[in-house]
Length: 210
Image 1: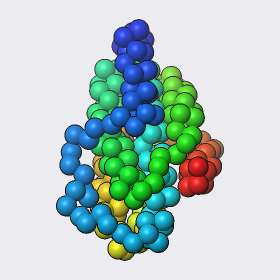
Image 2: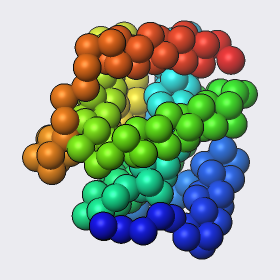
Image 3: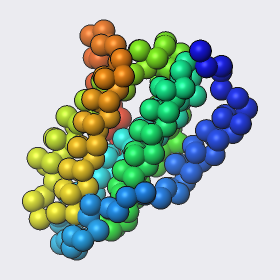
Image 4: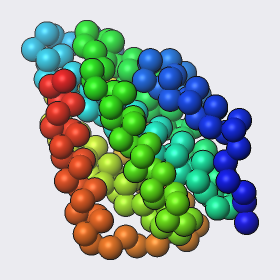
């Protein structure tokens, strides 16, 4: 049984939070859009930018969730799994931030709020136990995968750069869900899943504009 998080762990978590909300994120993998022409007409940029802002918010929340779940994990194995997922989500964070800049737009003004809320939810999930925490990861990633599929339907066909990023994100989220399920993730009760969907709709609806 792993002990509770140390002071150093909390300090590292605080540093990661500051890096996330301040926009300092570096991808470990090249962006899927690196070799795709990023230039779009203004009308198509205006269609793509809000969707990519929502996707960027999702990655801010993912950083917070996995950071909190790693802090509260009971076993070293689950902690390592959360940290690995967080590192891969950092790629998504950097890719979406870079794409927003290319589209001439900005991240959500409410990112500190989104981060704080997601971190609190991650703490609750982690303290419920590793099986529930892994189950929360499974459900989160499945809902995100569904959300990204919807964005692939809505992004302009001409915006190949944004579409390449979203497609790779969708593939990664599916892998995270499968890994968490294989590690022993417990199915969440239906009311929890419904609550998660409601919170997600509120976040995405707000981040589309703010």
